[in-house]
Length: 54
Image 1 (tube, rainbow, N blue to C red):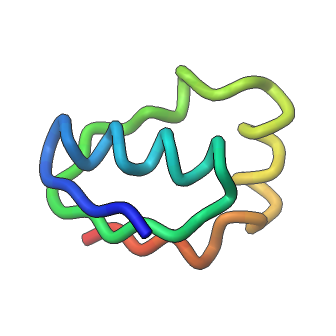
Image 2 (image 1 turned 90 degrees about the vertical axis):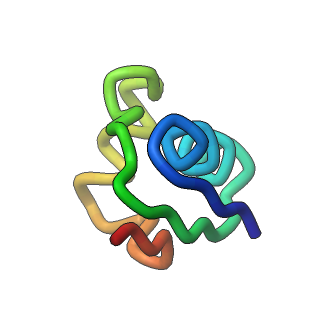
């Protein structure tokens, strides 16, 4: 599990998606554009619904 705030949150989310793990983040920058097209599609389809952002 990964956690972070702001830039650290963006990094935590990015790594969580890469490794298909969970993350808890706060006031996170959005790393969406850094993901591959396949990962972006997975996010849109709810594949990473377990990732918790606040």
